[in-house]
Image 1 (cartoon, rainbow, N blue to C red):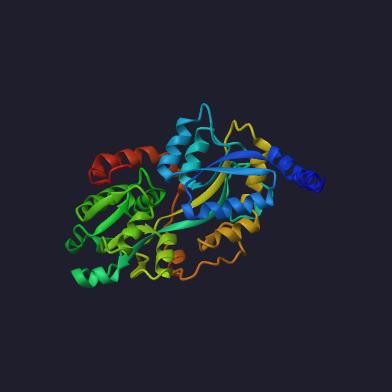
Image 2: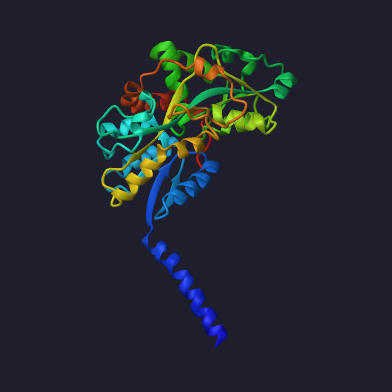
Length: 340
């Protein structure tokens, strides 16, 4: 009798949990965020929005962007959370994004939000191209410390450079866009042609070149600020170099896919993505945040990044993204790493 009563009590106590599970809306969320960011963001969002479950689909920027565009007639994603603004503007241009202004979005920095009303995307953070310079390898192989991008053309760097492929990696694309911004298009192609002589490999991940450099596989990795700071804080023998001739940068943002069957839940997640709580989470990894007044928690971030950001027309670059990528592939793809 006692056993039956306990079983009944247990089953009754589980009823609210079962009801909550049945009522939760599962949102398919496409992202290019780093793998280690996904679980903390999922946990925080699901704790704040208890009737929503996040199912991540994660890949590098180029792959996720191509997949979204290929699926545009029959979207499988509900929300994009963590993707390059170059990609978002390209998708905005072909009417893939659902107009919606999240609650609180007007407080974001003006260049971190859509110019449209209602908005089609909202910003989260910014990331920047950087040089990861392995000081141990440099000493062993007699590599000079670079202070500008042009310094990487030195023949002593032959075979000592790794860089992300811009067709796969958002970091690779923002780096190329930065060179176009500072050198003009013709000057950028001339620079990349000379740099290609020193490149050992083009990776399909923005983090990989810095990881390679931190392990001592190459002396230099052209990568992103966040990965460089993380590895240096973990004790990697790298110096984070912010080239004095200007660095390209990109914004990460959130958007709702036009055609989602879960529009109400998608809007609530978009609201959360611009909230102060979400911004404080982004600040674990990024030093430049979309919401003014939120103090990032990341340590060891070089102050020079913000001072050396190039002047960049995101929309102009976004409209020519495919053309730039085709041209890059036709010139340099021969040194790209095999795709997994």
